[in-house]
Image (cartoon, rainbow, N blue to C red):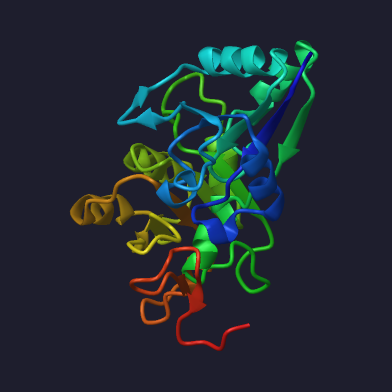
Length: 266
């Protein structure tokens, strides 16, 4: 008897931004294959009755390779079990959810996608930056910074990206930040374009480093910026104000509780 697989996005971190559907599916799961991106707050709530399988990537080392993860999903589902593949953010935004659903469909395994709040929008919002704004940007482009932008086989059209007038949001780009800024300015992107790097967004220790394209890499080195972090490039970064950091977890509170600093609560 074939079971079912749910591809679940856990959001940018914290139980407060985990959807009700995600919570329902997780609590009823018999098997959960998870990585580290959902964060300890969510991972600590995984049900004890479920088989928990760590699929995370730690310090560049994969606990399981992608084909091994997909084989485990198939094995557990084909044995009739309720399987959750738990990911950070949204499963279809650089989460390899598209590959996994292809594999499940090819093998006749029923599956459901549970969308999650993406960090590409939520983390900038957490520091008061709207990725679109009538004054600053009418479009937003989200890319991965995980690949080397200088390699000949790059799938990204850097020349076109450099000409965009809207907001550019880069996920997984800290390691290649210097190369990314060099490529963008080399293709004519204004060197004075504002940039913000938001580390550990929506956590109690979130931190923002700002600058412009010409100096953000140096600022990041001096500040010791490390993943996980979201890079925002564009005039919307002007919305960020250090004295009004936006949405932050109050000190000592559970990180799922958000308050708007210096503003009235909705």
